[in-house]
Image (tube, rainbow, N blue to C red; front, side, top):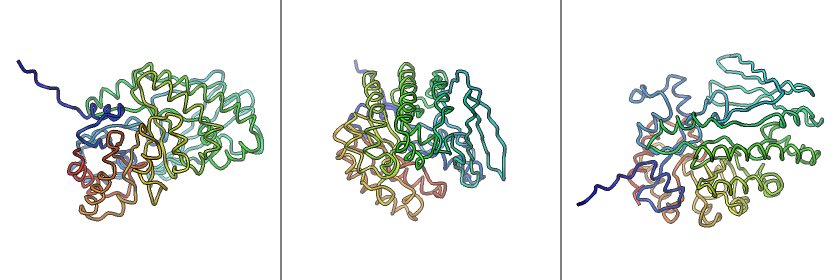
Length: 387
């Protein structure tokens, strides 16, 4: 008596990559977050997908895979996150929102016993992107006791029910990746900006170490909460560019967090990723030495400084890397033949590493990408992605 074998789902294939197993098909998990929001909000969706309401529906319409840390995000409010809530002890948070020429401006004021802190974000409607206009620590000439209180008062609560709801919606099409984390160094970037963080680390090293230690403990607690919820993968949204995450800064600020988060995930059978954007050649061996499982969106020339197959060699034999498509290709290619030749060449170079490679956008999909390009990349993946 023969039993019919279970068909392999898209989710099975994504999970296979997390286990570094050989597959019969390249996993293609695009990031259409900004592209879709822009085209929907501006009435630019082509007729054949005008009925599509969400990024998830678009990915399904194209019959692609889901390995996403922004499938659930509100693009007008945050660059990442949405499954973890800030919980405050003895701090009142005031949120003010207004519109200005169709831009949505959000200001948050944190009332601490040592003074107020505030930050301001603007969702630029014309570009469908979020920019920060004011940081909590705009004035780096004064150490902020209020910021220390802000950090000590903040903890995170992972919304397990919301995560499970989103994973049910995705179902067999892939995995939701909680992209809720950030390193101690990124904590300073978020509070002061990347440039001013350099001055803070130089001028106030002891204060910064205290701040980062508080932030790291809170984030590792969040890692544990996500593991208790059964998340098979999670991501730190650090924009791991060597221009601001230098080897020295990683070693002194972030290495312990990356190492501890990776260890916790490994012990629980999960995978720890870091979002990478920009130049990474100088830091890839260091990141691999911390036993990080994967990097999302490694940028290749001309936007980055390392080819994807070279990045695979620089990170040993375990690192998972996602990427392969940048704005240079989606904005500049004009014919299917250009896309076809590009994908064929990329997949040929990546074939030895296909068990730990996810075909994806290097960071996001440019809003200037023509709809035909998205379909052409889908078609080329179908043609050359069988292993």
